[in-house]
Image (cartoon, rainbow, N blue to C red; front, side, top):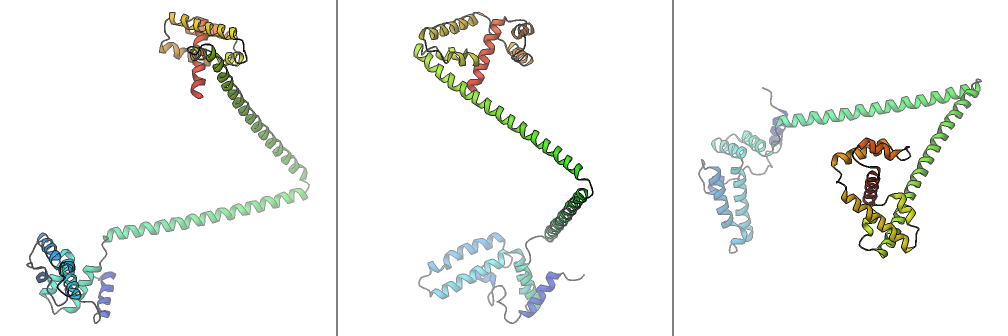
Length: 327
C-alpha cells in the first residue's frame, strides 16, 4: 500500500527537523511518573492526578520556590497531561517507551499524532468536492452571462444596423409609423396612470372630507346630547354625515338625534339579525350595488325575512362601523 501524502510530508519534516526539533513528549522525563500514575492508569485517574498536582505545583502556591523553577515544573506537568489525555499521543508515547531505539519512527509517530487533521478524511474530501463544484458552477454561470451579454450586444448592433438600412433604403416611413404607434401606446399608458392617480387622490380627498365632516358633526351632537351622540353617529351613513355636518341649528340636531334614537328603539323591537341573515345581506349588497334600480326592494326580496326599512338601517350601521374601523 502506498503511503499517503500526509504521511510522506510528516516523514520528510521529521528528517529535516530531526536535529533541532523540540523535545518529544516529556523530554527526558517520564510522563507517567510526572503525574504519579501507572502506565495502565485510566483516563479518570489521569485527570484526577493532574488536578491534584496542578493545585499543588501552581506557581502561585509555591512562593518559596524560585519563580522560573516553579514555572518549569508546572509546564512539565501540563505537557505530561497533554500527552496522556490524548488517545493518539498516549498510544504513540507507549510505543516510544517500548521501542526507544526507533528514533526516526518515534518522531514520525509523534508528529502524526500531534498534527494530523482532526477532520475525517471523508468529510474533507466531500467538502473539497463541494467547493470545487461551487467554483465550477460560478465559473460556468459567469461564462453564460458573458455569452448572453455578447449575444445581446450583437443583437443591438444588428438592430441598429437594420434600422439604419431601413431608413436609408426607403423604409423610413414604416419606421416612423412604428414610432408613432409606440408613442400612442406610451401616451395611453401615461393617461391611464394619471387617471388612476387622480382617482386615488379623489378617493383619499373624499375620505378625508368624510372624516372631517364626521368629526365636525360629532362635536355638534356632543354639545346637544353627550350621551347619545356616538349611537347617533353609528346609525348614520356617509351621505347623511356629509349632509348634516353643515347644519348649525340646535333644533335640527335635536330632530336628528330623536330620529336616530327612534330607529334604534324600532330595531330593538324587531328580532336580532342572525349570522345567516347578515351573510345574505352582505352578498345582496354586493350583488345589487349602489345605483341599482329598486335596490332595496330587490335586496328585501333576496333576504325574504326583513323589510326595506330594516335593511337600510342595518346597511347604514355596517357602513358606519366599517368607516370607524378604517379610521
